[in-house]
Length: 249
Image (cartoon, rainbow, N blue to C red; front, side, top):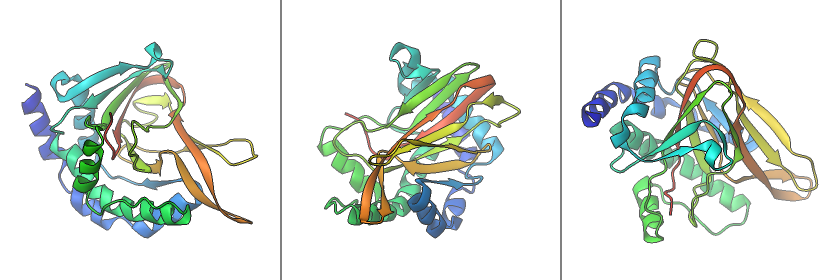
């Protein structure tokens, strides 16, 4: 049953996806990541694609684990990590977005004087993760209902961390839920944290820094620590697709 559901979703959800990714203004994405630590990609997925992906949450065979946030102090709500092999559309998002983001990540590491460089193909980076014992896939679906929220956090998972990740809102604000805004914070040295609410519509993706990002200061480049979360839902239900590019131990 799960396989047939996933196959139908992949057929619908993959439609036009590669063309939309190719048409993204990646210079804008790079510039906005550099200035504010995140960038919105409008309408990465279409409404029907979003609904069908959200419907995968009930297909238990597609997932390797389920996390109830309240049991671990992560907030309220729950999420599930996909198992390998990933549904085609999830694998396609990972492999197609990665090369563009790897170029940005390498520029960041140059600015931060880090010697680490990321390969141009996602498969090569995953091989690096697996060689270090990071074998478990990390793409996930998150599900919230009224009064649920996600505490500020970082998705690190192991020694090898790709510094950018993507979240796609699968539900429509105002129709499917209220509240539940995506929130980013940054902590600059010797300064108080700054919070930003990122406005998203159904199908929009947000690219953001997993851990830290370079910022130009008066005395050169310095490292800013980033966290992300979701504010409390006031009503309804909210589903999100999380695309993380490194695997977990």
